[in-house]
Structure formats: structure tokens, C-alpha cells
Length: 89
Image 1: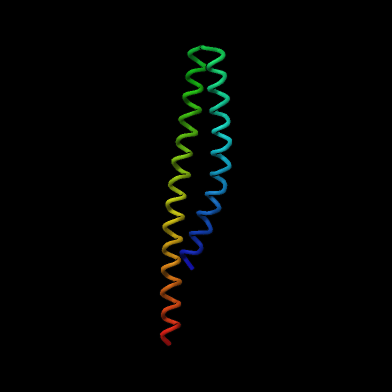
Image 2 (image 1 turned 135 degrees about the vertical axis):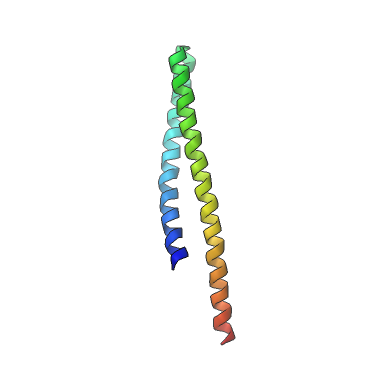
């Protein structure tokens, strides 16, 4: 039950994070385009900052994907073990 609950929470967090990543990626791209057009130090700094935020959230998303996959493997192993125990009876 614990693995299932953790998996549900991680999947929900992953869904939200995916939406946030898409938004920040768009923001970073817009900031990059503004920096190219404006060619000012301020717009360059804003573009770098937006890219850093998007990259950080992408890394967080990747960590959630890895955690989710690990919990899915754990859940599968537990289900296999339960099935084997029931079959042995």
C-alpha cells in the first residue's frame, strides 16, 4: 500500500512538473529571442536566468521519472512475490 501511495503522489507531482517545464521552456525561449533582438547585457542576463530555471526544473522532472520507475519496479516485484505466494498455497 505504501509503494502504491508514494507512486500516486510521484505521478501527480510529475504531471504538474511536466506542465511547469513546458511553461519555463517557452519562457526561456522567449527570453533568448528578446536577448538576440535587444542585444543588451540585461536581456542577456534575463535569458541566462530563464534558461537556468528551465534546466533546473528539467533536472527535477528527470529525477521524478527515475524515482517513479524505481517505485514501479518495486511494486512489480511485490506483486510478483504476492502472486507466487498465492500460487504456492
